[in-house]
Length: 86
Image (cartoon, rainbow, N blue to C red; front, side):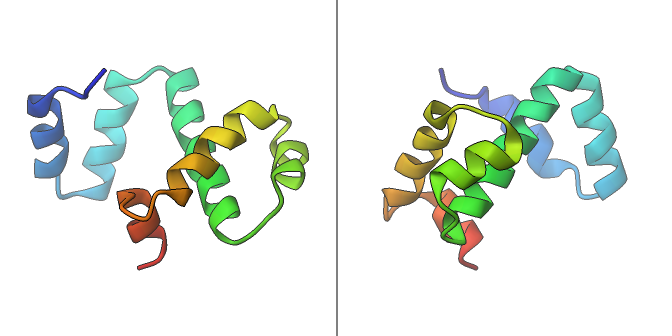
């Protein structure tokens, strides 16, 4: 499922950190925000070279969640990889 283009444009238009935080609080549930934050943390850890099992222990999650992140970072065209390496 692709993200709605209008939503992406709205997010891109918010140039104030506090407003963006409030917007995310309004449209995402606490569980959704936690999932997004966890995904970002494990992607950063993977990019730093931390072992998948260590990441699983660190966050109390399954290796399946980490494997998806690992696949993202193996894609040389990944925007996530570009952001993390910038």
